[in-house]
Amino acid sequence: MKTRYIYLFVAVTFVATLASYAVAHDMDDMDSGSDSGGTGAMGQMGAHMKMSDHMTMTETRAMTPADTQRGEQIVATMRAKLAKYEDYKAAIADGYVPYMESVPQDVYHFANRTATASEYMGDFDLARPGSLLYEKKTFGGYKLVGAMYDAPAADTPEQLDALIPLSLSHWHAHTNICLPKGVTEADVFNGNVTPKIRPDITSAARAPTEFGRGGGAGDAARMRVGYLADPRFGFTGTISNQADCEAADGNFHKQIFGWMIHVYPFASEDLKVAFSLEVP
Image 1 (cartoon, helix red, strand yellow):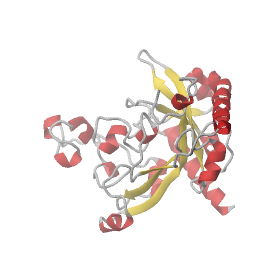
Image 2 (cartoon, rainbow, N blue to C red):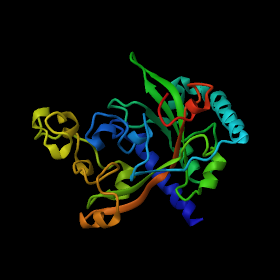
Image 3 (spheres, rainbow, N blue to C red):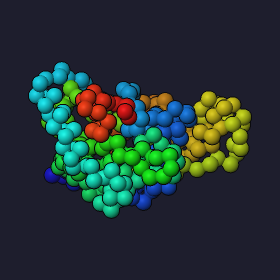
Image 4 (cartoon, one colour):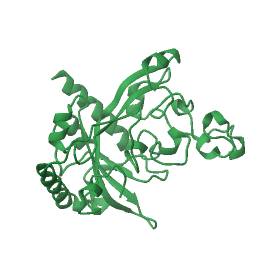
């Protein structure tokens, strides 16, 4: 019971950040120092995800006829229950708040505090995902493309498979995270580290190489402050083990956030597309 309350606190704290922090970025380029999206903390939940020291994924299981049937049912249920959110204003009215909206992203997470807290308590409902996934339209507004579901960090592969089959896609978790001295896990949950412009870098030519590629990464480099300023730390940092983290005077976290999975039911009847690791 105590563990469940911890998950509830984490979820509520994290999603409280989403509700009040719609003026930042999803850390795609800022965390990586790169202009290729999908490498930051939220970016790895965006356009593309891949296995790494900082991202753990469930192993693929062999597809069974029962899994195929369940996948088709999941897609059908999501289409029926989430179609009302094709109007993003309806999503906002239902408590889904854009997360880090002000800087361009491949996919925007509209997160719901109550739904996410329920998921971290083990209450899984296809009709009430923790986050809705949107692409921004060229001339304003958002297009609904899918949803993200969460599960407690302590869930086993069997428990995750019971929610969405592991043969269809990969649940993922952000793991082996080293935060620098003075930055806590609570800071990450609460969004206390805000990306800002570095006043000492006024052009791409002046971007130091330690902040990315240098000589051509000025925009990304200028955004790297707080724990993002040092490429050793964070969700794509070069440090991925406790010994190196402690040697750098950082604090190591085996996992931050719980398990997550994206589903894109509006893209195709093909289950490989609907459960893809990339945005269709």
